[in-house]
Image 1 (spheres, rainbow, N blue to C red):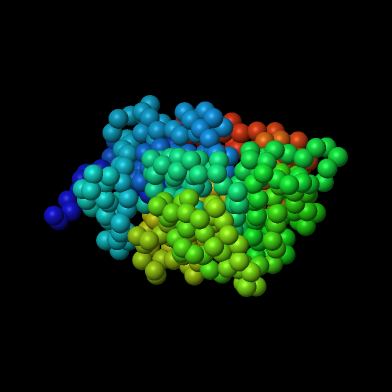
Image 2: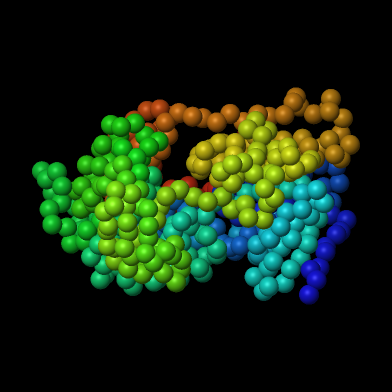
Length: 421
């Protein structure tokens, strides 16, 4: 059946993606841009998301162990409910996936969860689709039901697992190792440097000479010490070359499949559970190659967050965009800049004189200072903020106690964006 094409008098500002970047952009525009536009009622914000719920994704390394780790009503939150307090016609949520962006024709093709397809024209577009994780345990690669189903299967296999191998020594890999190590093995005593004879062997394979490459060597070494106390072993300077079966750990049907891993040095590892945690894959399958960078992200102006090659009033934000390294604090820092430039472009399109607007484009500058916090179990952690090393207690206080869940209530509800900044 041919897709329906929906054109209308409303000027649609479509946001593709319903996570940190997408939800924040929608709130900010509804609060600080749309009300100041001429003929406000002509504009409608639309979020298109494959998941009807937003999740505190950093919490996944702990949340995958048990629903008892976090209050589920705080971990998963309904996106439509977050926008119920805005005027009825100013916001719409579409539960579905964008299959193609026609940037020259200024339309998107959407397939809903029922299978029905629709083509929507847009006045402005924000690409905020984020990135998928190699393991379906670590984020909303599809929707919340898919993630929960994978967690359920993983939890059923966990009690009988004797060897777990994690590929990747960035924050997600190290946090997952620390959480599983403490949960399954406990923690060594105060005077022990490592846990002797752990119940479950947990191995982290790192391609580099040290773990946590974004942090200085002394902090990474501290993390190694904490991992040793929960029974985690590190293999450094080696990559996983071959996985048999090939889809072990990456496909929902094989999330608990036993695997044999061949490393670059020829050694093999057998794993009862294999968890790949080697970076992320930008969600850009629906975008033409001409708009992407070599690493698959949207080619985004690093100052204005516009996608200059795509035409007017098209933007990108978050992990899917090329303007900064993937990090939640950088996403949140970029929202006021993005939305100020969207507002400026909408004002100019509506006929406002440039001289009547406040100054020129707002510009974003990535904060490149050492900033990363990595909990290792429920009570320890390492990290730095704005170039300053943090003690374990502060890492626990800021992130490790609930993996940022204390911050997401105000973020998802829009209270964090109550004032323009």
